[in-house]
Image 1 (cartoon, rainbow, N blue to C red):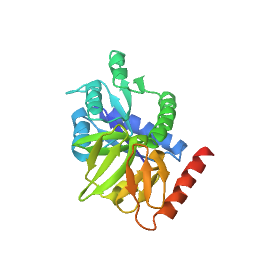
Image 2 (cartoon, helix red, strand yellow):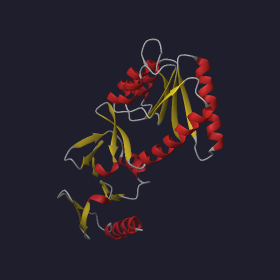
Image 3 (cartoon, rainbow, N blue to C red):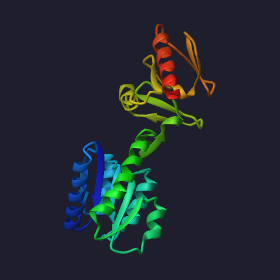
Image 4 (cartoon, rainbow, N blue to C red):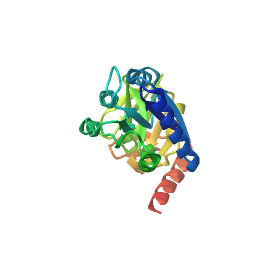
Length: 243
């Protein structure tokens, strides 16, 4: 399910874009979407800050009362939100500012169905690629996109779990190990090492009956009986990758 945010101060414009998005979804049945509408930029920003709403795609008007769309987009980027942004506007005046916040497209109104569909085709492909590469987490009251390849391992520490990254940094996550593993189990490189660790196989240098040796020098001790299943996962992951 993809989350799409529409932000325009005119209800009729929101109706037009939402209608085209639903037409697009019907033509591409594999693309399941949830659409949320906003008529003020500050309303969208509040949802992101307070409700942890993270859209995959944002279609936003530039000229809105109270706050320009490019200014709202800049605030989203400062919060660590890396969603794809398509600006919809009646003027080319802010084209440079739009691309400074990494907008994927700048479409002039009235937006045609064909032009929007062409952009959406490119965006969905990129979104699916991004979903395979990043994990979005709240860290120190900020929403952060963590590249999966940067995660070396996660260790249980009482009520919090500690995530260790390849640059030598670490961060505390206020999530259960079960919830973290639920977020990562779809990626073959992440495996459980007992109840206290989740390990990224990309960073495993060697493995024995008793320990996992990571490429950063860290040694993780395995509980009794864990090695056979981990060895099988390790070989399965690397054999599949080579294929």
